[in-house]
Image (cartoon, rainbow, N blue to C red; front, side, top):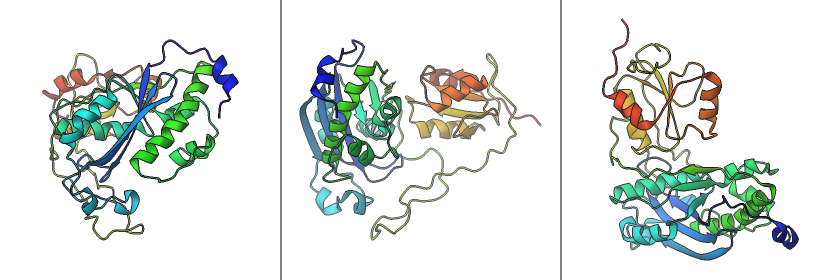
Length: 328
C-alpha cells in the first residue's frame, strides 16, 4: 500500500480522468448470446476515493449458467428485474466516468450487448483494464487473476465471483495502482468504448458446435464455453490488401478493438464474403481492421512491425459490399 507521505507528495497529472466507475458483472457464460445476471458499480473520484456503490441482480430470462461459480440459481433470479428495468440507473452510475474492470473488454462487451438488446447505449466513452494497468506498473504478480492483484495490495476477498465484492476488491486495489501511476508519471492505458449500433440476437450464420445445458453441471462437468468454430476458408490467400483496390476472397482479415457493429456479426459478414477471419496478426495477414490504430494492443503493434495495411471499420464495411472473386 502507498503511505500517506507518498500520496501527499504526488503531483496529480492533469490529463488523468476526473472520475471512475469500477464495474463487475456476473454472467450466464462467455459467449455473445450470454446475459448479465448481476452487476455492481463503485463510483470513485479523480484520486480513486470511493463515493458510493450499487448492486443489482438481473433476470437473464434463460438458464443462469455456471451456478457453481457465481451461486445465482434460477430461483434466486426469478423475481429480479430485467436488464431493461435497471438500464437507466446503471447508465447513471457510468455516466461521465471511465469504466474500470479486471479484463475490461469482457465486462464492456457484455454491457454494450445488453444495452443494444434494450435499444439503448451505455454512456461510456473510455475504459481502463486493471490487468493492462498492472503491466504498465510492472507489478510483480504471479498471474493476472484478480485475487493476485488483491493480495499484492493487501485487499481481502470475501466472496469471489460475487459482483459486489469483486467490485469492492477491485476498487480497493485500483486506488493504490492509480496513485502509483500518478506518482511515477505512468500513462493510463485508456481505450475508447464504442457502443453497439447494430446487433442481432441470433447468429448471422449457423454455428458448428453447440452450447450444452448447464443444468446439473458442477465443478468437474467440463467446459461451459460455447463452441465457436468456422469451416476453413476455401480460397487461397491472395496477399495483402492494396489501397484503392477491392478486397479479394481468401484475404486474411484480423480485427482489433471495439466495433460499432457487433464483432461476431462483422466477422460473420466477412466470412460470408469469402474472407478468412484470423484471430492474430502475422506476416501473412492481408489487413487489420481497427478504429484505434494508435493503440498499443498486440495486434496493432504487430501490424506496424510487419507493415500490415490498416483500415477503420467504416472503410472496411464499404469494401465488404464488393469483394472480388478469388483467382482461378
